[in-house]
Image: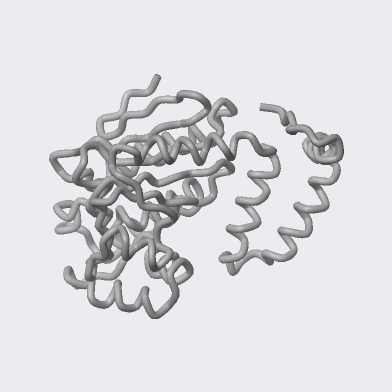
Length: 260
């Protein structure tokens, strides 16, 4: 088992758990943490025993309260550009592009790069004390890990403009009203609710779930034709054993038994 300095992880009941464990630093994303996130997501994405992933932060105060600003002070323009590109690669290819559902369990502050990481997840569940924002303009910057792209797609251009240009935070209930999070629950129920959602997904066809994630992601990808991805996947699934089992179960009025 790989030992990480900034992350804890485990696999239980087909769920891969990732805990960003830098509580004294409000779980801020430094370069080493990004390295470790890249490695664990590659591992979980390739592990057939892992059917879904829950990503959260240590403690009760912060999911991830942004990037580690101390590391910004000595970066050149070229280095800063690469830092942004690297964040895009990790968040887009490995988190958003994961072939299995990824749920962000937002247990407190999700700011800057932390909110951008949550935006890359397929679903977001927030505890009642959570607060979210993209405050980069207060540093003379803009969101650099996909926030300017994903936030408008999720909550609309007007709301995204206001959040990004003011740098203001929203609380969990406002985030729910805006469509930024799927659900708001008491903190003590946060992980169990995320588990409940994943366990329900696990009763569905594994191959269909992966195809659905890919097709939905294609809708926001300018390099792909989302409708074509959907049509191709729809046709392909007709040739799978899962489709045969699903239709047989429906006609026979029984619960389908998909391969685990």
